[in-house]
Image (tube, rainbow, N blue to C red):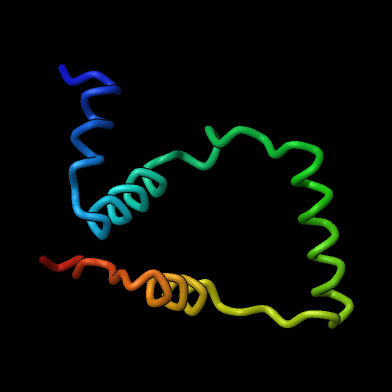
Length: 83
């Protein structure tokens, strides 16, 4: 059975786009009830940002747009999931 370290080393050999795909698929496989609770600092930051949004001080941007813009700036594209 592969070890964590051997899997990590193999994953590092993948092209960047495939590493991103692997990260996304691994994250999606984590059950919601097993994610550790947020720290107090993160909880306060989320509350601050939520209050700004509720007050109309900021406007939200859809996640897919943020993700696409970030990948474009990094000159990366997500592999076609149908391949």
